Length: 264
Image (cartoon, rainbow, N blue to C red):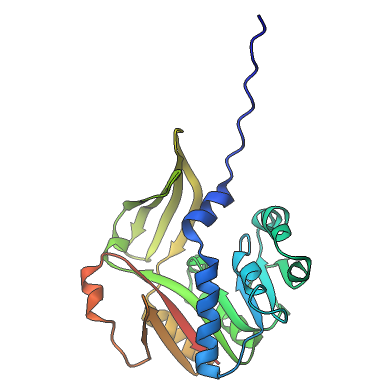
């Protein structure tokens, strides 16, 4: 009797699980569009997604209007190739033609100009020196069209200052966010992303990040220095201007996330 050969196991698709656990492009892109239109009273047309990875926001952006164009910038060719192969073909041909994933450094000169430039998933925290963050913000400011806006996300809270692990359950897998270290002298920390697929062992350190944890005040001060006229903080749907305090609700949270928006 012939023994049946086992089918080779499918390779672990880290970008699929990352996107499922951490990305919500429909909600995010709708917010970018609505905020711009609210403060400018006109439609933004060009989106630039810095540190774009598989450029999900770009692909969602071009669905909003047949005249919209999106550029994704990332210096890592691997996620860009994944997006081109696995995700971009799901768009209609005319939508695909308006998405431009570019293998570039966000600090490069002559990157595409845009009405909205976004940096999500705390990717700009890889800049550990103030001079590096300021240079990035200068590049962003120069690349924004007149009346353009810059949207970045950030996080804070007491749990950021000691190692810990958070878990989130999904239907077929679990996602783990681990802060492995924290240096109180430099505000630098190491983070890992782990996944556990149902019925399988935990896949550890699928992604690792070596970041400086920046405060809101630091980032807003740098934005002002490079020329942004105004900045706003959107903390879980509550919009605060430059002279506002955080809402009292932050006192009951160990961790919080928010958008910081700068207007040109």
